[in-house]
Length: 113
Image (cartoon, rainbow, N blue to C red; front, side, top):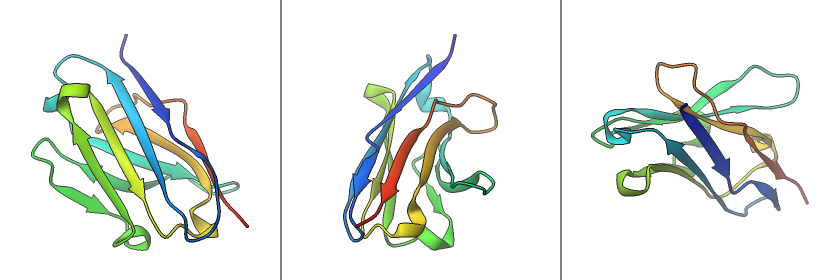
């Protein structure tokens, strides 16, 4: 059974940084595009960043220049480096195998002073 396990969330002050990790238990990880999504309280889940098989990346405008998605195919892991965090980044962050309904359990990121 394919599983995704996110980690790295927590409480951070505005302007701080966090790195999220998502390890996938799937063979052929390098053949899949991966995405990071987030869902804030009372809001719909939204795409934050995507990385394809060639490591080409895309970001939602609100995180461009602050967040970086990357992948390590040897470790079956995708990362989300988040810098200059803002209160509006507070959400549960999920990783996803692109184009599937395979989701992790989510990791909570809270940006607050």
